[in-house]
Amino acid sequence: MNYLVLAAGATALVMVATSSFAQQKPQVDAALVDRYVAATFKGASDEWKKRIEQDASQKLCSQYRNELPAGEVQSSLAREKAALKFPADGKVIGDWKKGQQFAQRGTGGQFSDGPSTPKGGNCYACHQLSSAELSYGTMGPSLTEYGKIRKFSAAGAKDAYAKIYNAQALFPCSNMPRFGHNGFLNEQEIMDVVAYLFDPESPVNK
Ligand code: HEC
Image (tube, rainbow, N blue to C red; front, side):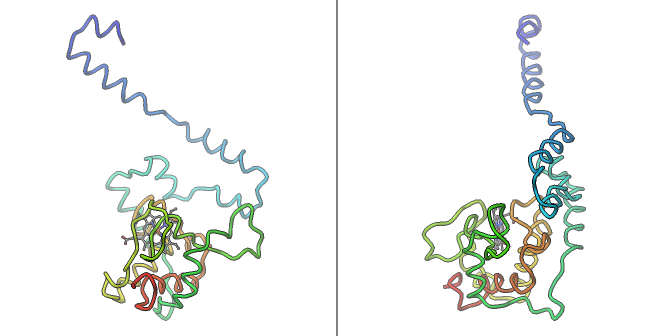
């Protein structure tokens, strides 16, 4: 690059510098990454191995580094929305006290957990939920007064159910786990978490 700069002057300097900067983005060989991930989890159970396979939306997120082009945003949202499953009777609000336990628990479903370890949604790792909580993560937005802000509307509660069921149905390449979609939380458990966000008596809305 130095030779080019000396020979060609200021305009070329900008051009060369720009193209060399663009080249700094590492070109990752997707097949190599797949092989590496598969090798890392070689000893995993069949149930875990299934989780290593990326679905269509995840593949696109990897390909575009979570910044999907406009056309792909629409198709990804449509695909994920089509896979949403709501409770048959339309009721999406369960027991907020049970939901609070899921939201605050970080165990369950990890390599180190046995099958009897209680499941948790680990929501606090990424969100503030109740204003009384001292310790919480900030990767996701604060969810304090979530139901109150949405006037406890039925549509808002349904959106919250959809979000917890499959975050990517509302936000492509979301970093939030897809709790229902991946079979981690069942219908009743998701309803309980929705209640924690939406019940007027829940600490989230106090
Ligand atoms: C690994 C981090 C992570 C975990 C764990 C997580 N979330 Fe999220 N969540 C996010 C991020 C990041 C966003 C913002 C981007 C998006 O909307 O997908 C978000 C968005 C949301 C939203 C939409 C917020 C809005 O403005 O409407 C809701 C509701 C939500 N999360 C609820 C939950 C609940 C309930 C749990 C636990 C069952 C949970 N999240 C667990 C990362 C997380």
